[in-house]
Length: 242
Image 1 (cartoon, rainbow, N blue to C red):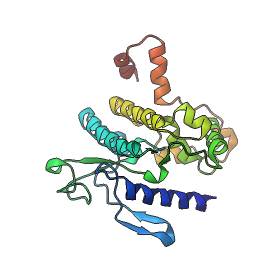
Image 2 (cartoon, rainbow, N blue to C red):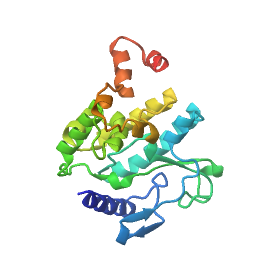
Image 3 (cartoon, rainbow, N blue to C red):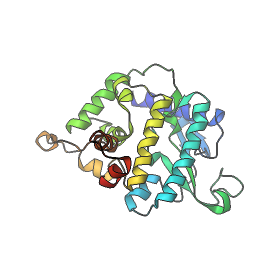
Image 4 (cartoon, rainbow, N blue to C red):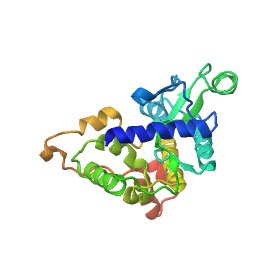
């Protein structure tokens, strides 16, 4: 099953690269069909999530990077494609000299250029759920929420804070879901911290002892934000409180 999933993602990545053109989507440098592998340019400054975790990101730069990712997402949406996995870890940051970024490789005057990656997750909005769709997504979500991790649940735990309730319950992504996820990234930029645990933090939760893993997990950022709004706080006060 895992091999079939990777094969599908590999083909979707090639399809997206062949049909969608945008300097704000991570380009391909090489393809190895025998190993279902693709090579992308090196992201000089890592990902937006890296910058958030390091605490070095200014709000102005964060909003500019988010705008770049939004332009890449718009290019997908104009072709009837939903990305399905928009998060700060998918927004990669390239400097001057990176391939595929215009005349100088990066942004204008060599500034950092944000590109949206992970296009192997993209697909037609109207496509039905995959075989693992509803059951797989919901079971992984329940496992992550309850603390009993199953194979793939660490990655699911990183996606959960960005996914809207419709996607979690149906296993289907749509363009509106992408916009919701991009809004969570906007909230991250405004708060200056990631909504999802880092790979190291997520791995620490992978405790095989069920007596250690049955514990409540914090609400996603967007749910905390909504709770403040429901209590009568303004958006500015909610951001300040978070």
